[in-house]
Image (cartoon, rainbow, N blue to C red):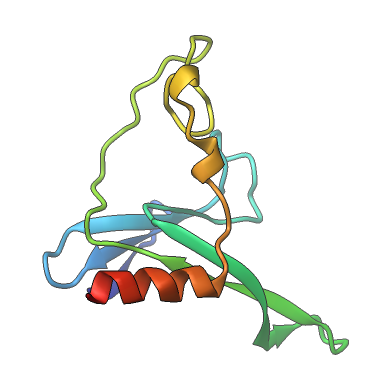
Length: 124
């Protein structure tokens, strides 16, 4: 799958599209947070996996200290649909499932070797 980015200046967001289908599979927006409380941050939605931090070879703080970079993996099965939950009920506010079915343990950074193993399994 190839992706492209489409900028919407009025909403301050970037749509992430699957070139083949034209479907929106994710978005990047600012300010981030559920109530957009982080004005100096971005939020990325729609991705499947996030891989460990690396040091970036392009950006630094001007004093020889590199900034970080991270890899984010998107799959074409992403669709825009709102999570259905009610605040104050038995829903988990992090994974949007009933607390008895909570999947927060699946929300983790992966190592690059996990990405490579997944790729090998899927290529078979």
